Length: 289
Image (cartoon, rainbow, N blue to C red):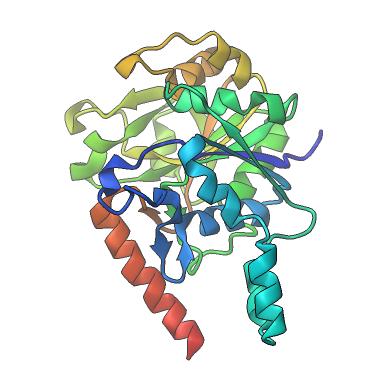
């Protein structure tokens, strides 16, 4: 079985929860410490073995693509001034990693954004990383945790994997919540454990929630998800929902959830973003001492 080497990162959202910061700067480029949020997401993908990253955006998001490109003029100026180390730090992508960008076209939801990457992904199985969610790189080893574990779990049984994490009672209504095939798995769940899921309930009340395991924003998909997305009709908000395609995939092929190791931050929510910025800055200041 071929190793998963492709990943999709949808970046077409307008970031309305981050206004006014995101009015002229893509939310994905807002800083966490001394790097933009999407920098950590791409680092995470690379650490898990991803070699081709597909950004799905729109015309106003070209700054994200530029961030991962080489600015030849800036590079030359820095090197002429003897700042080779700084120039090298800006061109940090490994030579065997490619970043491509494709436009979503119409804003028809997350499912539509993932489907838009199909011309580049082709027949490959692939990962999806939502850039709003930044996993803590300071307390976990990204080379072995979470996404890398999900890719390895997928290789074992070909079941698509969805990362989940237990949330507090008062936060259950904010997320898609996993309904497990075997309720005993809830008690047995451990960090980086993978087990079957029966489906997902979108933003339930606590009393109606089948568990407290919330979708985090990391997926590993069989290429078959594209066929389901292509045949998924728009539903909530007139958008093509990724969860609708996942439900269809579950009924036909089975899907697993993977419990998350470490902490995550919602970089698309103002309060969580500010908390994350302070935390990332503090960690980097410690490293600079």
